[in-house]
Length: 427
Image 1 (cartoon, rainbow, N blue to C red):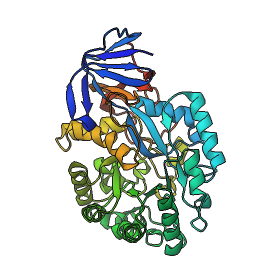
Image 2 (cartoon, helix red, strand yellow; image 1 turned 180 degrees about the vertical axis):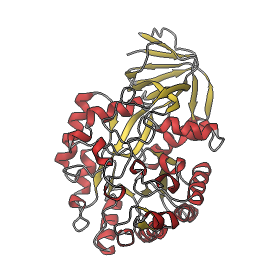
Image 3 (cartoon, rainbow, N blue to C red; image 1 turned 30 degrees about the vertical axis):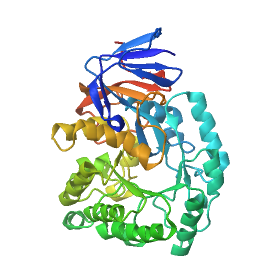
Image 4 (cartoon, rainbow, N blue to C red; image 1 turned 60 degrees about the vertical axis):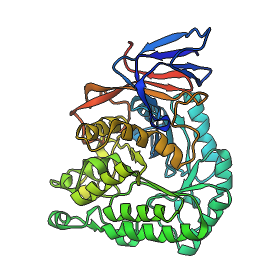
């Protein structure tokens, strides 16, 4: 399809572009910026006045719920949700049911995604069989079938020797490893940030040191094996400091923070509101400030959604017995724009952390709209106001603390390989 997008504000941090400029697409690629090539006749023109045109957002670690219990969501519902949130590529996490520890499961996902023709899905495979931490998965086979990285999520690895062998195996095949650092034994049965509030509420606390110790263990083995690593969903000031130090020492590490930890603090759980029960737990004001500074400085080069959809009943139990997580794909942009409005981030920084940042972190050939690149774009109206409710959301998840609230900033178009995959309103 030949497509022209005219009159929009193109923000492409990878090219240092922020200007009103037309963009022309053909054969699934970016054909030209600015003046259309001679003889180019678009089949469709999108008038994007008042919209920001950006590379399609890329998410690291969203849960798409398939294979698994369909009442929590599936590939159809969650990739539609992704498009509605501006995400054209999702690197989905491996803790499905069954987990993504074999080429057969990867192929099942890829076949379904191809049939849907919605957002691109790039699986993250399980680092150990069934995520049990004792036997290595066939990482080479997972990579060959389409996995862009491997991870053991928050499941503990049996021993440091097993973990080292995992990293040596991954390094041999130049395969990225994604870590969610946490000391399993220090976490124990905790569900909230360790401190005065958790004690007053009678909730088990998870100390910040659980993240620091888990991170330290892995950093030592990265230094030994040289494996490329990404650390997901960091939550503490100490973790930001440790990542900055590792990067200064030249270790091949990147890191992200999810939007919830940039917006909320542990104060939100006062009153036992289970919508704010997440892993890792919401932390202190000081931790949030350090995370925000880490994003501004680029130590945390990625903002992730941490999308984890649940049905309403999953959040109806008492706080500690509820299921952790938020459905976030469609609200991450709006919350990010609220940080821009508060001058905590620039709009260019926000777009970069959602596009070229995750692309570079996982070595993906995307995240930019340079000529010849795949035509994956999102067009959003930063001023559009909308109410978060069942009618406006596409996800099957009903677990968002923003339900029935008005937010600002909404995606109008998502384009994948040059085809309009999502269109909110005709313009």
